[in-house]
Each structure stands twice: as C-alpha cells, then as structure tokens.
Length: 250
Image (cartoon, rainbow, N blue to C red; front, top):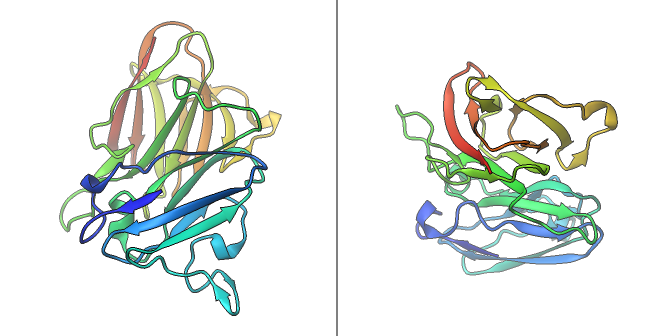
C-alpha cells in the first residue's frame, strides 16, 4: 500500500479513501506502508488487536529500546499482525497533521471469516470523511467515500445487503446516518459495532437511524424486497443535513 502526495497529501494524489484491505480472521498478514509524500507519517490500524509496536503510534508504541518509528519520507514500514476477529475496521494516518486525514490517508479494513469472500455487490462500505482541510469561515467539506457529491450505492433486491458505516472525521462525533424511503426512515437490522458482532438481543430490525461517532464502525443488514430508491443521509447532531447519497435497489 502506498501513501502518496506532494507538499501535503491531497485528494488528487491517489484514491480517496485508500484501497479496501480484505483480510481473514486468524491469517497472519504483513502490510508494507510506503511513504511517498513529502512529510513524515504513521499508519494506525484502528480497532484491531495487535502488538503495540506495529500499531502506528510513533515514539510511544512498542517497548523501551524498540519504539514504533515514524515513517519518514521515501521510507516504508511493515505492520505485522493476525486479525483475531472478523469485522469492519479502519486504517488511518496517526500523524499530528489534520491535513493528512482530511486529505485522504485512510481506508476500510475488512476482516472476513475463513473461507468467506468479499462481494461488493451486496457488501457496501460507506466512509464519512472530509474532502480537504476546513477553511476559516467555511463549512466543513464533508465527503462520503471521498466525494462531496456521493456516488449512488447500488443494492441487490431479494437478498441481504451489508452496509458498513465508518466515521473517520477528526472531531465530528455527533453525526447520524439515516436510510430514508421518501420522507421517513426505513428499517435495517444491526449486525455489528466496532468490529464485534452484536448479541442476538440487539439485532432486531429497527428504524434506520444511527449515531456514528468518530472512529466508530456500525454494520447493518438491509434487505430490499422490491426495486426502490432510497437515500442515505448524514446529519449533524442539530439535524443539519451534510451529505446525501442515493441508494438504488434493483
């Protein structure tokens, strides 16, 4: 995986978000992060249990005599871990520069059960982030999957679809997602939170409304029974609309 950019990571420097990383529970992995920006950086594996040396907190992770390093310009670092559980996780820059996170140095990390395959026609990743750095006097440039004008989410009718919601903004901790049919929330079935499957008592279908705080992931099952057009909306805690993506079930 490459971390690309010029003076600072920019949205036109590479794909935003970064590539979806698909791993399997219990399978050891080594991920090489190459820094091709002109700034130092670090990469954190959010929500995954792993040795602190590889967890992307430079100068702190690890132990005396072997602390996690900064990924210097033109250098690389190999993170090694074995995912202990399946779920929805995040990788993102852990450097002290908001421009890196707002510029797109983040992505989804999906851990599957052994033998399971990722099918993007029924498994939909939705990452709430920013499309550049906030400028004084302007509203925050929210983005869904790296786009301020989100692309349609295309679901299959007659089968369960998984919707993975991720909030990787720096400090927008009261964003709420709604799945709307015309003017009212439809229903969805909660499946998991922060990479952990929910117990049966918390998986009953309910109105499609969920607070997604910073660094959280929420998985839902959506099962369209007929062709329809829905809307995935993201709002602030005061109800202000900030993003809307069409959801097309066919």
